[in-house]
Image 1 (cartoon, rainbow, N blue to C red):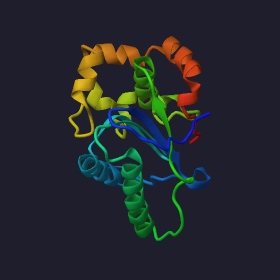
Image 2 (cartoon, rainbow, N blue to C red; image 1 turned 60 degrees about the vertical axis):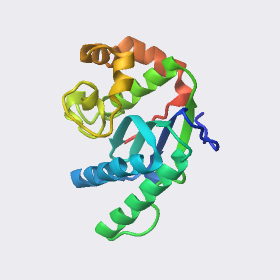
Image 3 (tube, helix red, strand yellow; image 1 turned 90 degrees about the vertical axis):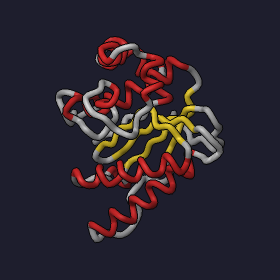
Image 4 (cartoon, rainbow, N blue to C red; image 1 turned 180 degrees about the horizontal axis):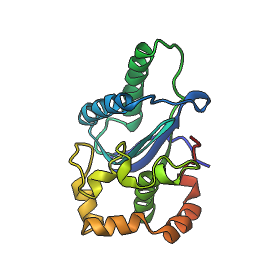
Length: 197
């Protein structure tokens, strides 16, 4: 079962995730995703973090984050989504909480976990119970397109990619290896979260 991390440490990797209250959507339309992505770009500089992988889904989100300094991932997430929630509520004339309590997180302890979690996050739009797209190229609210150099973007660590995958084709092959995905999802089930949409 996924657990909440209370102590975030410099140079460690974490999977941070949450979903909408009552499983409701946290994004209603394209401009909501874009609004949050602009906020993320500003916040990662302020909090000295590196987002390795992310995926924004209609009613939840996933981040794979490396904490580079003393500013914690917890502070980053709280700042980001408090601000987003206020803006969202104002635009849609709604009140109350947007999310299902505090975000959850798991710490990543080794490289196989780290790489599989990256793959798991990027595959979210096609692996959910009701797939959002037929092809990952069709989902623009993750940094998968940056990984395969189909789009330039500021929420991406080129050095991480080059260290683990010499070419775009290597990463595509890794992500699309269905047999490995199934085995690794079972092996690392405690790191993952299967939110319905």
